[in-house]
Amino acid sequence: MRKINCIVADDEVLARNVILNHLGMLGNINILATCATGLQAYDAIKGFDVDLLFLDIQMPNLTGIDLLRTIKNPPAVIITTAYSEYAIEGYELDVIDYLLKPITFERLLKAIDKFETRSNPDYKRQQNFKAENPSFNDAFIYVKSDKKMVRIPLIDIIYIEGLKDYVKVHTTNSQIVTYKTMTYFEEKLPATQFMRVHRSFIVSLSHITAYTAAEITMGGDTISIGSTYLKEVSRKLNTIIG
Image (tube, rainbow, N blue to C red; front, side, top):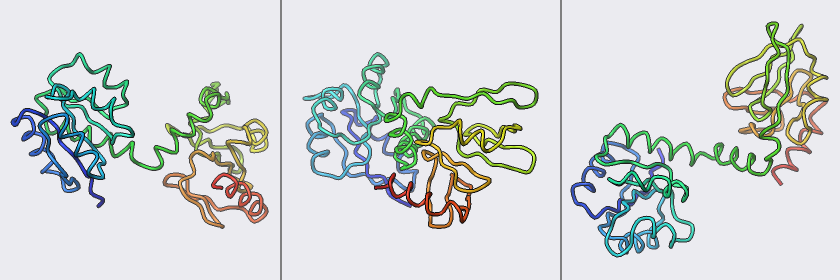
């Protein structure tokens, strides 16, 4: 299990100890330093390879907000404070979470989970893709399913599976069955974001988590690359990866 390198910065001894006790219950936390002032936190961030900073706002010398504005490329931050009025300002600085004192173990655990989600390479890749393709974020198609026209955002489509008499659209939230053809989807979906890899499969490039010369992994599903598609799929994937 990979350790999370943390710094705890809070001028209140009791508050620091509460956070440290909570973190001590987790097996993947490595405490690099504890700090009682903003300047101590500044020096610690500069001196260590920090993954996550638990940061109080009201501290001597340098407030937590001022510290975040001062540090270039700060680590991930979870704000810990008794003052709810700083929440908006904290989120504007892209903090992971905002914990109000007194901090319970359950609430801290939820914040750690948020950090681990955002640190996941798949999450970062998804966020980068969305930022680079703003128009794609809003694009959608309608398909008829169960006598209804169902709206499917393109960003939610993981892959499309062609079966004998129908097509199944696998999305991040559900599976939608429709009698549209694979050819319909291949022509309708943008080639910059989707690729046919098999007679029975079209995949979303933004949802690929791994691949080999013979298959592609989409989250927990593995899809074989059809022999007639091998060359084109290889070319496109190599172009994307660079």
